[in-house]
Image (cartoon, rainbow, N blue to C red; front, side, top):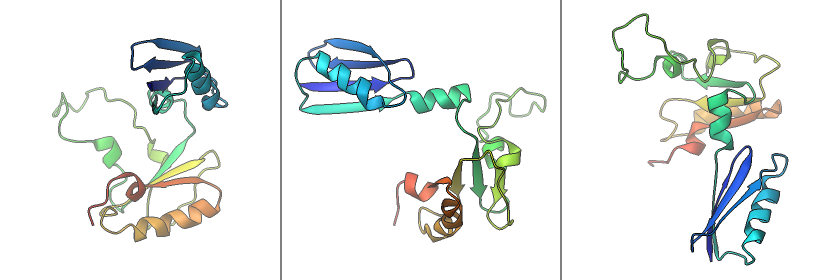
Length: 162
């Protein structure tokens, strides 16, 4: 039996390859508990388990996650807000735009000798060309990680081209 499971903030849904479905309450403190309950409801253990989650997506959409800081290549800290040229109102200076995922006060440039506000618990480090050589990102990430922050480098997320 193959099973697909989606862990959400309220419910965890599972579907077996034969079309049977199960919906159980999610367990935010231990998502595995809800996954286990959903699988057990089928009465057999799957040979293949495919798992996905909407928890992170919901946190982004609802802006309910912990404050995150962004460290970029010098001169690129506003790229996340500027975005791409593919916008519905490219030349409308007064167009309403969604709030940036990282507010301006939490965006820093790698060479600027910054200190992070106390509420920041995680940091994204995203430097140009890190897919080719992640050394610069690791150099920025190391002291932040020593402070106990959860640090994610873009080189660890994007595929390598080397």
